Image (cartoon, rainbow, N blue to C red; front, top):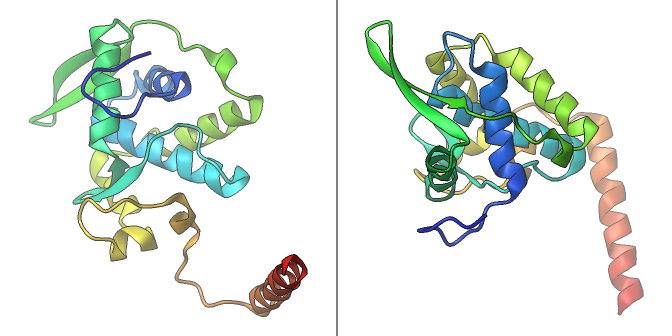
Length: 190
């Protein structure tokens, strides 16, 4: 899948994830482009927390209304899906405002996802499917990395591990053990 105007070639998984999310949320009255973008962010963040890697190949950046997929990559894939018949862009009225929705024009190719990924995607979507754009944006404003990042700064996935909770004794013990293991490994390689 080649996309003109972008330096990053998307994985098929990223495109199929967009189609899958839109197929799961399409009947929700609050579904729009904001919920689609926030869904991607939450799904990738949760998968990173569970497995050490995101599902898609999107990067996320700080925007005014929370983290979003990097527009230079995400928008080109989304628009490519519209042009090539994977998605349909529809504008509708939502409480006096124009809401942009992307509807799937075909079934997503689920065979490219692992079973565990489908379960995680579905769990995230069930937890946010009735959330409106303002509420989901407010929720993502609580990410520590988003709070401290500069506008349009990339938010590396490991920053989703940051918390404002005070460390517990088990955290200090884990850190001490990790440092000792690192020092042994470093000394052994010298």
